[in-house]
Image (cartoon, rainbow, N blue to C red):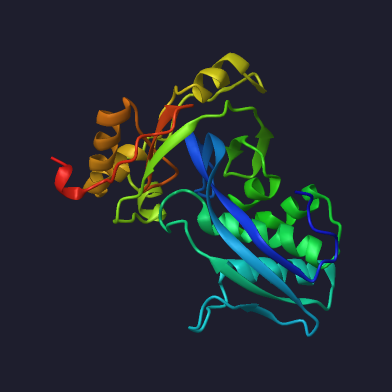
Length: 276
């Protein structure tokens, strides 16, 4: 299906996909306290769906929530940032069919914000190149530029340095435990390993090392800390390991995934009573 025309007044059923971290290595820490990461982000088709209707009065509104929205709502922040940067008089009504869990490490909120930028670029007929939208997205959160880019990527730094990579098509089984974990608690833990070896050798990405990581090597440095703080993460990882022979937490959790190859994963429910 061709994309909608530039300047369309209404955009419906716009997907906001989630991501998995195939690995996540903490390779250092900056003087300002931010951690330096290396990871491969891969897009998966578990997604929220967003709907947009252009307004002529400049107002920016979320139609899917009846309660008062805080000023820091990320979708409205994204819309406001683009409105101000572009100097346009248009507004928008946004509605989100929320399917992605929060506190999962799958980037749901960041993906929604990126989808707002991409949709409003078309709805408001701005015709900004994707790179310009990514520059704006940096102020909204470390993962937002990745979702604006729309391509699997090797990610460095605090998440702002992206290099597109090819990742073989494969299936994943994903479990989201009911419990959530505060990202700040994990990164602030004294038990967090912060010195994993870098895949960057003499300033260049080592292709063999990256291929091995994409194929399932590496680890998630945040996972041991998350499992120690949230037993459900450890339980979900064991449950997936028993069924698929592999498991790994994505991001800072609490979602855990298994690679299942090209086969359709067998349907199964993750019941707490099944766990040791």
